[in-house]
Image (cartoon, one colour):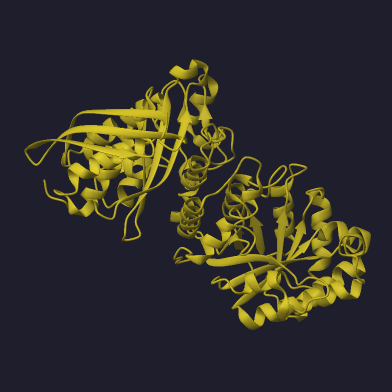
Length: 530
């Protein structure tokens, strides 16, 4: 480890899940964890085992990670329990995660009022819990809850809590600004004092954003020695959110010249990862987001455009390509080519940058995005669009027509039920086929009818399954006539996951477009022959 190496700890799957309106499913958590792993994050906090069914299901079958260390979150033992006989701590330590992060009190006010135990008992709770964690896990972290408030009120006691964690073998001791009320100059002063006791290579920082200072506070802590930073993608988190890693990371790497586990090549995925999260949350990305927003490198007419065209440094603090974004000249937008070529390389397609088909594809992507398509969260649809532009995707089947009927009625037992039926007419392998299937919804029925027609011809579809389905209204001002965008995530028995997109004023038609891409992508990747 070098003195300039910063370790990145992502808590999106736990802290981010506390955001109002955010509800991660297991499929969401797996996809986000895999994206963070590819990015080069050092630690991924998967959640709190034993706290809820979603986190239990996630840890029961955690994703395989190649870079990051999966971390389970929990709290120190409860008063009156031993570390070896506390059900909550046992659930955390019994998870398959190699690393655990335990939170404990460091503010004497909380110890006196919330825990209602002697202050020495709280210190014992910290020490004994971390000793047990170190005995059972490869690595243990201690999150010092409300540390900055505790330090301001009683610095001696707050530091005693940190000493207990240090002496118990905690790899990282993380100072938490839990209510987000501390300002950068305070963080810099207090962390500067703590590093006299806890070496910087064992010290972390965890900031909330209640004063809009979480990123600034994180960088201030790093300046005086902290070498682990905790945060979330896009600043998700309860109340006003957490430190935004999407901003923290390029600030550390590009502005402060510090080393992380994210290579320059991976840094170019930053915009993609940010937008992928928004797509999974079914919300529009923040256009004004630093580094990754659509407007982060946008220039509108006049002097700015002229200056940027001569020398981009005039109005751009970095080259947008460094973080996977692009310049957007509103009047005559020539951006996008580098992003398209980068995606080509990701799915193994080599093409000359001067090939006129690249320009044609860039223009088509712009037109489609104007219509409402979004490819940052639907890589499979983008790959198919690119390959179709190059003329390299077979037509595995051709739809003649489909019809979907939904019936709502009372059954013989008097229970209200809904049932959907889909009829599909397609041409496949020179044969015209019509199939009918029922489902518990129109998309399920349509999927079933397509499978019934295709699986006898393409057995590669046997393990294909739909794992997530999202609908977004693109033109809410149109009411029930609004254009909708459907995102479908699919998976197969080989562990592959891919996402596809479709748009239409008819939600079933949009769903069919996404289903068609999903099936086509699977067949193409499986090497199916027409």
